[in-house]
Length: 143
Image (cartoon, rainbow, N blue to C red; front, side, top):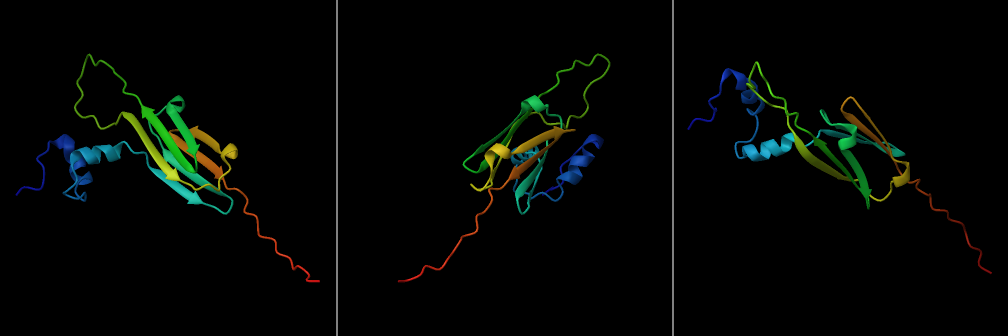
């Protein structure tokens, strides 16, 4: 049984990239993972910070929604169809297409106060939390 795929010199990177991947994963599922943007989410005392890598995506092709605590990022990277006159494509690794990621932030967020900025292929969201009211208790006199 030959577990190492035969590859050309141009595929040496994918040989190392896929070395630790489980053998049961199909190449289709690995390609689907490649379309998923990398995201970091941090919870602070009064807000969530979400940072997503969206290389090759224009700001106009990003859609961020919040519905019942479910934050969804949708984006599309478009294929540049360039006709090469003096050369040919030897290897193409850049991914193109639509992708969506969703995260359940719960219902304790201030939807109207969410701030988003996009710079150099990185989307940053600041999602403020609703201020938690501390329960007020007081003693009731019995007459």
